[in-house]
Length: 446
Image 1 (cartoon, one colour):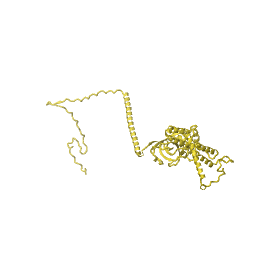
Image 2 (tube, rainbow, N blue to C red):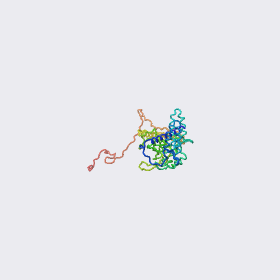
Image 3 (cartoon, rainbow, N blue to C red):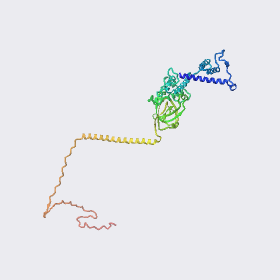
Image 4 (tube, rainbow, N blue to C red):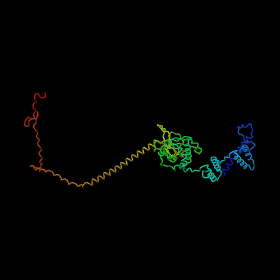
């Protein structure tokens, strides 16, 4: 009721201001006003209605009457309302009040809510009434929709039948097309849905291949993307989404190692506080891993920037904001790589030591088992009899001499007989001259 009174008062003040302007124009000198263009014949200024034609009031005369009625001390408001109704019935003007269409109703409702901010301690109670009256509930004025941003809003059957058929897969985004209007609706819904709400409704079984090979089946589903942030840019939101409160728009490319060289492209409207805005517009971002949840919009075609310059398809996802998973220190690239290499080396050394110990134990255990089996099959070892001690040869009895001393008879040494010599220096051993040299021949030595 309070909103209706404010709207009526606003309309009356506007009409009075218009009447005052008309009166000032009519009262001014004729030389100061440009001559009006020729118009069809109208009733005389002094007559309110032409009786010979269909009732049609003179707006200027009726506005002056309305302006004059405001000076009545007690009946002025009632007279002004009566003149407004008469002018509307005689088609002198149209009374398009604040509650005539949805846009004016929304403005009136917002003004009413702002006015309740001065209610002091009664503010919560005063705000509940206009909020409920202006909502989209049955019997309300359809000024706004009361939503919970922490609860995900799935697309209804009517929205799927109306919005989804105009989306074209395998193309880019074109301004001014029905697809662009649906794109703006996706942005508005994602803007008023928190990241927590998206995370609670993710279908984690959907992968890159699901979205690219069968986009019509999974359109509008909430999917999860995680990987390395390659690039992020800022753009102006579409006009339709700007009117709904979407003031910022960001585009990011996320690379997931599991899907080869195909990155995801994600659209979001809220900047992540963990990221620096200096990253906007950089050619390549490294050492930052992010997560993202949002609605799958379409299979998006783009031109790659590699040497092939070929066109590729990826998944376009629209959500609220990025979530930073890990930010590595850019100055610790080599040390991190070296530490990883040292860890790998130490791990391999430890593995070799463990394998050596295990193999040694395993082989030793096997040798022990084989030795036991061999000993079990062999007979018990018996020591051989001791050897017979050697018998010394007989010794001859000692020979006693005449003087009574005993003398051990020594065995005779063998006699060595040299054969007869031969040659010039040889000779008969019986020859007494055998030791003398013979005279050389006469021709010897010459």
